[in-house]
Image (cartoon, rainbow, N blue to C red; front, side, top):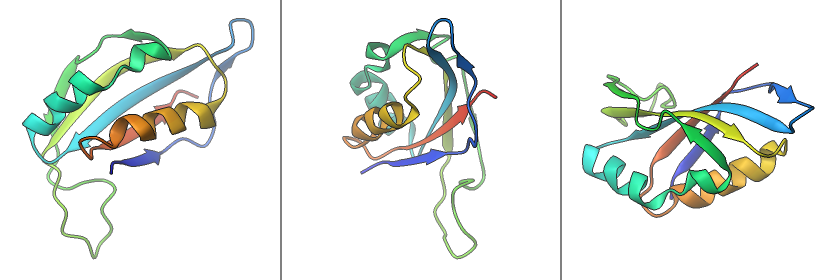
Length: 113
């Protein structure tokens, strides 16, 4: 099962259009898992996904790993800028959690403030 890590405290709400703006990062241990996740994750059902797969980069250690953990996450994919059609953050997180389960990736969510 994947892990959802919401790094945001607040979110920017467009009250006129009822939208939330997210930056989504996907972390996993190998590129094959990452590619499999992209095939399975229909994020566009929640809104309009802009700039999908813009860039990828590597991290020496997972930002989610605590000091006792030895988990290494080599590949971090910037999924892109997501414009959601809802202001319900919990619904968004629940959907992303379900999408992360098949291949067990970690998703970092930065809600634009």
